[in-house]
Length: 299
Image 1 (cartoon, rainbow, N blue to C red):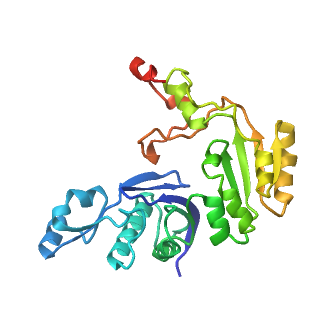
Image 2 (cartoon, rainbow, N blue to C red):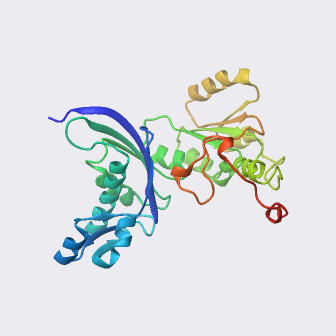
C-alpha cells in the first residue's frame, strides 16, 4: 500500500500552444502543448525516448508522430492518441513541478484545470477521465465560472464570483441565466471605478498617463441586481464589510454586492502582456522601465 505524503494544490491551464502549472509547493512551469512518439525503431534509437513533450518534441519532430491535441482549444473527440497526448502533457507538468506520483511519499494532488468556455459537457468529461490517476480530485473551470459550474458541477456548493466593476459587465447577461435556473450564486464586486489592470499599466509604464480607464458612468449595481431578481447590497466603508458579507452568505438566493474599494490601489501578482505565468510580478518594484515618448503620446 502506497504511503501518501503532503497534499498539494495545483492549477493547470491546458492551452492550444502552451500549457502551464502553478503548484502550492512554489513551482511554476510552462511547456509547449506538443507530444510526439518515435515513428519507428530507428527513430526510437536516435531519440532514446518512448515519448517526448513540449519543446523537445518540436525539436525532434522529423522523427516523431507529433500531436498538438488541444489546437482547437478542446480535446479532439474520438481520438485515443490525442487523449493519450493530453495525459502525457499532464504527467509532464506534474513531474516538472516536483510532485511525486508514485511510491513511498506519493503526493496527494488536488487540481483545478482551466478549460475553454466553448468546451462541451462531453469534452469536460473526457478531460475528467484523462485526469484519473493523475489527480486525486479535480475541478474544471471555465468562463463564466460562477453560472456554468454552479449549474453543472457544484449544485450543492457555495459559489462566489469575485469580480471587478468592469469585468462583470462583460458577462452581465449571466445574471438572467442564474435567475432562470434558480442558482444561488453570489457576485462580490470590488468596485474602484477603473478598468483596474489598464489603469495599473498606465501608472507603472506610461508615467501616469490615464486614458479610457476611468468610468463615472457605472450602473447602480444594487438596482441592476434587483432588476434581475437578485438581492443587491452596497458596502461603502470598512466597518460595513463584515455585516455585508454575512448578509450575502445568509441569503438563500443570488446576491450581488457592490463593495467600494480604494480607486488607486494596485493589484498583485500581475502577469505582463504576452508573458507566461512563470514571469508574474509580485510587487510594483519588479516593474521596470517605461514606454518611450512615442508610445506615451498615444495615451
